[in-house]
Image 1: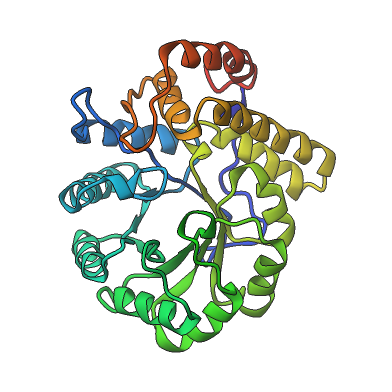
Image 2: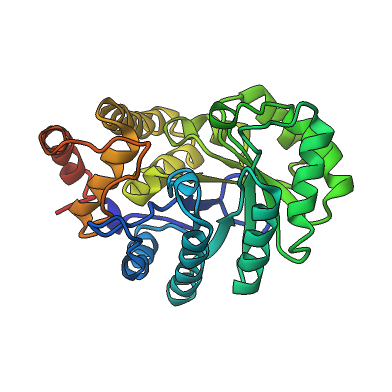
Length: 318
């Protein structure tokens, strides 16, 4: 079984603690009435730990952060901090929002809870038009938790903010003392390589596109943060092991398994389908919130019919 062969201490390019770090971006669990189900956070954390995940990226895109209230985000942060301590998971809290005041309040709260790191996306409605403005925005957020490592969350496909990340690091290092790196959720290999070559010895790049992680491994990223590690972390570790051993053909096959699952989930609405998939692991995360669309029962039945044989073959489910 795959789960029995996981090697979560595999070393490729390493983070500052000396090992490739795999971080899952967990779904926000909801009850049927739409309220947050904080009681599910602890078993979710246990599930991640058993599958070889090192950390959780809380209140991110996968967690539908933009559809949560400030109070809900704080509630989730508290629940994940407790769960992280219980299961020895590092917790990186996403604090980005369209209001700088909200970002600062969320940062202060995350720091008071003992977050291991914080991260923030760029504002996505009224956007910074110049890189120095983005740096100023992130500097104001990071300054609220000066002792907490800060990672910029680069996801231009959703924010529409797409400056050079190597230049962001160059300017940010001088202005943001606790800047530790970037959650890089864009397929920009040349830009990632430049970041790593110029700053990779002192700052970390975490790859954020699960279905092309092999590209990130070849470039030398320090770790990965993504949604599929909620249910496919063992596949990721098999790919990393093959890559580390110089077996590129096998690594490519493992990557294709991940890609094929993502492609199938996308057909029915990725986030809604992936969230519903967690029921197969005994973790009913509930539905997605508007403006995302729910996946119909018939569509999800077809998704499961298509994916379950592969999941069972891989040892992900019995």
